[in-house]
Image (tube, rainbow over all chains, first blue to last red; front, side, top):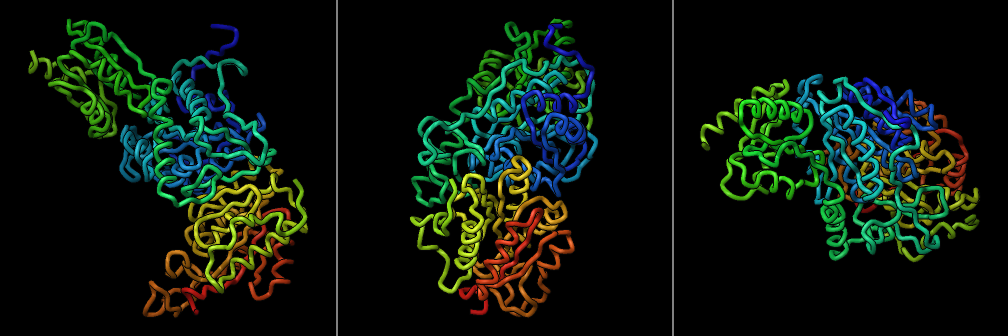
Amino acid sequence: MKENERVRFIQGNEAIAEGALAAGARFFAGYPITPSSEIAEISSRRLPAVGGVYVQMEDEIGSIAAVIGASAAGKKAYTATSGPGFSLMQENLGVAVMAEIPCVIINVQRSGPSTGLATKPAQGDVMQSRWGTHGDHGIIVLSPSSVQDCYELTIRAFNLAEKYRTPVILLADEIVGHMREKAVLRQPGHGELLERKQPDCPPHAYKPFELGEGVAPLAAYGGEYVFRMSGSTHDEWGFACGKPQNAEMFVRHYTDKIEKNKEDIIVTREYRLADAEYTIVTFGCTTRSALEAMRISRSRGMPVGVLELVTLWPFADHHVRKACEGAKAVIVPEMNLGQVIREVQRVVKGNIPIVGVNKVDSTAIKPTEILEKLEEVAACVQ
Amino acid sequence: MRAVKFDDYLLKDKLPVFWCGGCGNGNVLGSLLRAFARLRLERNKTVVVTGIGCWGKADDYINTNAFHGTHGRALAFATGIKLANPELKVIALMGDGDGATIGGNHLIHAARRNVDITAIVVNNFNYGMTGGQYSGTTPEDSITSTSGYGHIEEGFDLCRLAAAAGAPFVARGTVYGITQLDRLVEDALCKKGFSFVEVIAPCPTHLGG
């Protein structure tokens, strides 16, 4: 262990709260919901100790609104929720997109739809995290598969939110959120932290939505700049503007600023893909079962590799295509009825069979279930 | 950035206002900006938070910081802004549909929480911007565009609601009594804690015109 690190044995949700603090977050607004509540509980104790604010709002609509307001006032801000609360947040998630206000939304996924099984895991919010709020937009979604990831990706979520002036979703799940394992935490002051770009023009010239350089600087309420934020279609000054050309420019901007920076945003992990004949594309908790399935398959002489999507959105088209190129078959295990697999089918060319391992009974996908599918598919493509 | 005159806070190049003839919103805007001037609010330390609706367009004409959010959520955005930077003067401008119907839950909890925000609800008893449908304050028996047979529900008394929820300052004025309204708005802005002003206003285009 390096001097600037601390080794802890903690839960994923605790690592997320620690990650938020390490990223410099100083404002949490939320509403208790299983299986994310530990993030609120820990934040309520830790934030006041570092000069931060914890507030429990009347619902998740208000929670994300308060987070967005706090961010416009200059604080790095976050909220944590699960499926039902995430559904309620979709409305104001769009405000963060439209007003380009950095914030981090943690969704510890549970079994749905509706109230579903509150204490049980699922990965059913992949598409909701991409398209849940109405209207075209780009979005960044990160998916942790370990407690260490919970910590590191939370810090990364804040960095990306600040850099691209955008909401970032940390799409965890009940398994990753509640399991305990070793995590190495940074000492305060270590590791790269990104801060939003500040304007340096004279106050009268500040345009909070200037399109010139991609992502405009964002002042904070209370400083020398007087400015307006808006969830309505607005011009570069933030004033309501109904001109078709203006709407077109901004809607494209919300997508382009994410999609055109995919190389910077996307992180994937490759496991033994070099000689793989079978590729498993995976994310979140299911990665752990996929890696075990890979290990067992290889011990049986079957060359399997794994591509883990750490960044779920924007989708890693290029990485997935490359990882699946020349494979005899591709397996996509996910705790839903097939959400990521649609993207894999979209990007993988040729006649490669792409097969899902799908489970919605609120229990984890076991390595043996992936293994069975691998062997079943192998028997067909031999 | 101190300004002292009413029109130092007015974005004159955005005039004329888009509100209909006979609407009370312009009167309330006048009271608000005169109060800003009397209190010499610093424009950069002031944030006007609006929702969606006719009165929710008020920030288009105000020369302070502004946050134009979503329908009903102004007080929730305002809560985050105020808690993140308590030095700011935060004012939420909402209508009856916006602030008291879809946003009713945020209103009662903002009052209970007693965050130092001034809420000014212009109550014209209907959804004016969307064509005169009934809101949570529309009186029983009213004919609106969605209650053609006469409204069968009773409306909220917003002041009693805000007081019951714990607001330490609750006032009701009208756009017919501007001198009194000027005073109420100024008193509300000076009150530490959650202050609530309901302004009774007409909607001659859609209701009772």
